[in-house]
Length: 279
Image (cartoon, rainbow, N blue to C red; front, side):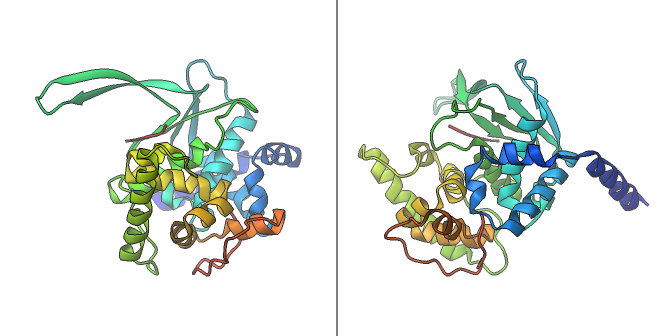
């Protein structure tokens, strides 16, 4: 009985989420990395985004008035990482809170002497275990270069499914935890050395803060700049390709005929497409 009622309510909510074709086109035009998807996967992403909107609750913060285009843009980006596994990966919470730009979260931290220090932390987003996802929204052209706070925070949500943000999410049965850990550990250590030495880095230096942040930043790059990630961190790209069941670098090469110097990645994905704090 209860399962029937749940499905009935979901069907009613989903039926209420109707998006005109013109709005899909307008919103997707701002998310150029969606062009790496095949036509079939793009249609699948639209349906998943509709279901996401039907299941989640969106709230504007600090006076931000949410409109349909903002909600749709967030839903499309949030669903991209789970395009091939479904919304079950986002179970157990419903809230998406949207801020007009970066925002401040009060923090408390105890030092080794037992003294509690209070400070304000300026962030772009935050994902809470069992709770909402907080993200910043920027107007067109105002977002920081190379940053996708939505994909970042929803990667944290996937990382949280096994109870801790450590850069090792629950892997599909055909993946090796050992291979994942070795690939990410080696890349993270090398990346931290680059940041510590002051060298320019392909990824946002914030990724050096913690292995969980490295996973989230790498996930941003995997979907937004996949050829760059494949070229700079081929082992990480291969693991993320298997994890997300996608190969967006192939889509980027097909679309833009670039990625010089990168080899083809042969993974089990075999498909084209595309609380933790944020920077």
